[in-house]
Image (cartoon, rainbow, N blue to C red; front, side, top):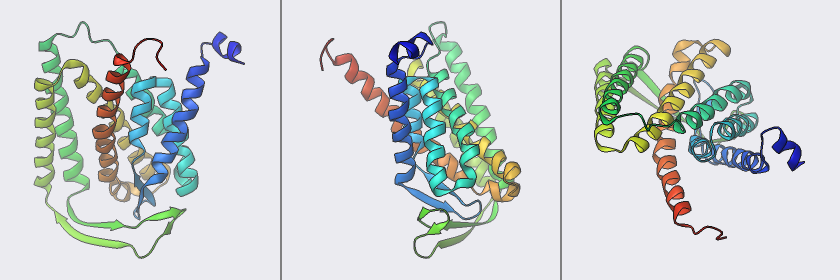
Length: 260
């Protein structure tokens, strides 16, 4: 069994890692869920394990664990999302794993700073535009915990509030400043890891917006209600996964060769 897998370029370690991380992704996604009534989707913390799998094991394990693990969770909580999730989260895991492993030896400090500026401008403009167009004006936030397909636990809570368009311009400006600060203060390797996660996360946010609005025919307005939650998933995943992976790599480097 092992020799056949290795003969095809897939090691037994890769297969085992894919299975283990798939279980971790599914468990993390199911561990905490908040329903979003506009789409019947849900906020979760599964991105943490998707990013950890991709950053540690690379694009293929990241793609399999992200796609299959997340789709298993959707099959339990929100089955209508499972087909889209298989592709969207799988591609997210692949992008993060692939980009994070690109070599940056030929990237000078000046080019890195220029890249950071361009990335900040692009991210800030995207956040400002999407927020001002789709998430400004009168908004209603619904919260409800659930453990099964569209089965809330107790009454849902709703909050009505008004969001001015210039709020999102301000948020876009903060996003630009944050990326610029990271580019000037973080080393290139860490900065590139963060960029890899943000690119993969952007694919996830965009993918679900298109899948919900077009594939599930919910319309752009309903699909836009989930955008802030998906952005939140990316940020939670980034803030937890990147430090966790850095700590893991430091521990591995300190472990003597041959130690258990």
